[in-house]
Image 1: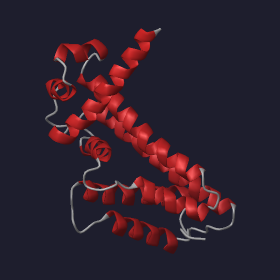
Image 2: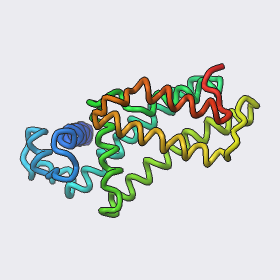
Image 3: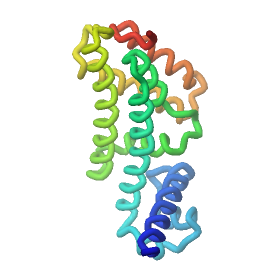
Length: 200
């Protein structure tokens, strides 16, 4: 019974090594050897757990998506007022700063969209999760009578996801003109002025 747990732990370590390697080398030039070096293992040892680099990247993206989206949804679910839910969704959806390795990985997949079926699949999965978070919060606000957007729920959610991605990309790219605080304030201002106040 101990062996499966040990393998699960090793696979989790490899996912973390992949995230760190992407942060250091970028996705375009990443190789299995880079991940192996980061993990302190041989390339062959990694292939014992994953068939190839794409499988490992798919797992790293899944883990990153869960960490990012599940964590945000949990924060939102712990709040009652839709206005405060929306403020939290915006805040939790932005990177913590330029050195946010997890968000760097997720955005790198966005940049590579269209270059392979793998990248397209992962980018679409991320987008659907973001869209679901915002759509859910806005719908609850409309139902509660505290939101009255001039756009459809779907259109407003799409715009918030687009803003989140755009500002997030500037933040992880190190653009000193776009801070986490200024991006959050700008997104909240847009929501406020589109009939979805972010404060009670």
